[in-house]
Length: 572
Ligand code: PEP
Ligand code: MG
Image (cartoon, rainbow, N blue to C red; front, top):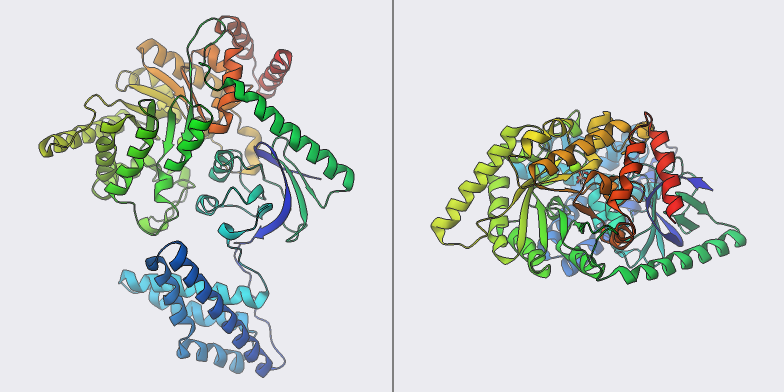
């Protein structure tokens, strides 16, 4: 058995497909027969060309002619006699293996292209590196898995999944995910939860022990993973999977029920989404709105920025489908672990402390922020849209963003375009600075939403995706709890709505504390809504005061967690 971090609940049983995107290690190996090596290269080239042809065809059919053009460009490079001739000469002249000759020749061309001013030539450099690795993969016998076309019953196994790779997953076919890296709040884990795919992350050394086609069990609730289990284990987990699905079924009775505590406090249980299509799950699980629309997902997995109109359509679709229920849309939060290649961002030394979210948007008003704000305001005519600003650290950012919203409103007025004149503007409270300034910021905005994923990271000075220090990364750390309690009470005092859209909002051990602190809105993966509503309906805010008081009296994370675990058990 392997142990990792439980990242998305449920049990998945299926066959492993290894997605290897790690950098290849190319060594300079001498060859005995240069003729045989040239022949080996020619065969690999032929295979790469035919794979590229297939990819181009598939892309043209499934995505569009434009995307297929990239692959046609790759074909031209692969069939360029100068390039292939040089690779062959390199093998012959230096008696080196084909992988190494390819590495040398392609890198040389790529560097030349990269040094040119024209953007088109720089793109050529990327293409050159791409065909280089594809040829080398063929030579080394490493298949590149096309995630979108993996068969039903697949357990996806990877070193790490980038957000855009995860976005390409077909949830009908992938029954589980195992990665060597990542943490509970890495974006791939968040997406796995959104797609309700059982996932275990941070399983150290897993890739060296598992092969394509191995039978794998993923227990996303405990973090256990089995490879080729014995019959007894397989039967036990098949039973557990059925039990899990049955419990899920029982939660259905909370559909249509209001989220009201036993002592009559009305709360809201809403959903986090990344794409307009996620709204269907929100409706299926009876979410009372959307507490966080991560708009960066509209910008990922594509080759150019979505236009204002494309964004407008996406926001409008969500607002209309939710028919008047609140839809909190967060303006672009990229940077950090969320990279978008076509935006031309340089890599920060410390991405989480760098050029990210509102910092980036205020620096790129014309091409990024204004079009997004216009799209949001235009869409606000069709539902209950609220605008949320991410990663705020100082009041100037709030004021500048609000001024820009006002300017955009005036522009729409001049053009006679309708929008909601009373649109609410709020902020994510997810930095230590925002928490400390919560009393001041509360007077400046219409609502707060606590982003515990980042608040924990920035309070504990602990990278949210670094496994080695994950023992520090806990929302139950007394420092983080104090911060949360303070933010909520500042919002309560100012009379503004305060929600939470970080992962802690759906943690059964955290919900009782949040109710006691006075949180108004809980935003989470749609699949966690009913379970959270059940907890709320069975709780009394009054009675929870003593529990919160006790929890806040501890000095260590462990004491808080142990105490809350026991409390949750006692309620079962
Ligand atoms: C958070 O930081 O808690 C949050 C909800 O935002 P994200 O996970 O997208 O950074
Ligand atoms: Mg955040």
